[in-house]
Image (cartoon, rainbow, N blue to C red):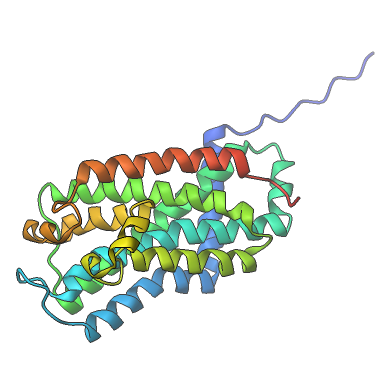
Length: 270
């Protein structure tokens, strides 16, 4: 008699693996106190600090906290996507986590689904906290009507572009520490020249041209259209919110970021 062949255990479906991986990513993030404090609370500290110190009128009945709401949400999105992805993926590559995951039966797509789920959750939490603080502390006027739809698509496109860029930039660093030292200054410079921390018309013209190349400027401009009256659109470089251009540029950066990810992403150190 021949021995019966051992039964092969069926692997879970790709959808189940992706859900499990998303849960792992969320648990890992929220268990890292430093990441939670920096990513979630840093924008809130910016809003409270600058909003209290720079409480002046910008015209059309808009005070600085109302103007700054679009900028601080932009900073929160950049922190949750570009900075967070670059730092954490570089760390996972340097400590061998990525190499280990690549050697398992887990579909590689599940890893990226987990990262995207983390970005979505952290971005939503950041925005909700900022809106609550803005309303309760500074009396911020929230969007109304179709402005909420604009808020959603600008946030989704901006977060997608920054997430893909963060994944691509992670290949430049050898570990999470060098990634933080590399990415954080770049992100802060882009935020400053993009009108995140000050009215954009106060940024020198040549820096406005530099900022227009990158997605952060267009993300901030799209969000300003949501929180500010249309009369302040005249202070933008083109004299309008240019929402069509915002969508095109952010969409192009999603494509560019995806191509960079495909070309540069590595599962282990060189």
